[in-house]
Amino acid sequence: MTSIVLALRWVARLDGLIALILGILLWTGSPGSLKMHIMIGFVMTITLLLIGLMGFFARIKPVLPVIAIAWGILLPYIGFAQLKLMPGGSHMVIQVLHLLIGICAIGVVEATAAKITREARA
Image (cartoon, rainbow, N blue to C red; front, top):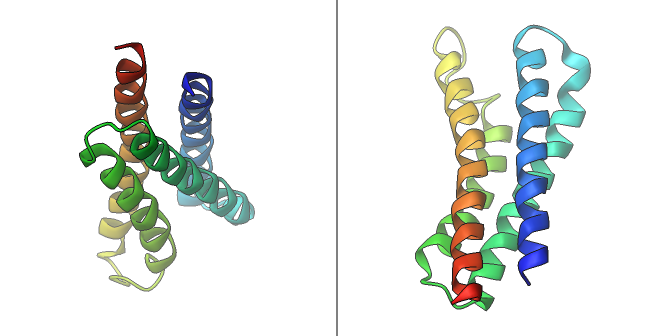
């Protein structure tokens, strides 16, 4: 199981980096990267859901798996809803919120994976 957890960690790391780069391109006016950004976001969502489920199967305390699954639901919701939320000058607030949720998604995967790995070694 630890090899799967390690693979999910690397998927989250690489996926997060690519999503961040594509997001910056979107902010700077390169609309061609939107579909790729959405696809990469779904990979992160699936990674969050899988690491959350793995946490339950590894029988770690349920706090991190629940956070991972909730984050996996929140990330695409904010991603798709941001086009309709706070239009106008204050729209940047939603964009920054989406950025922070995306960055935190990597941390949620890392924390959950680390706990699973520690429990497996114990």
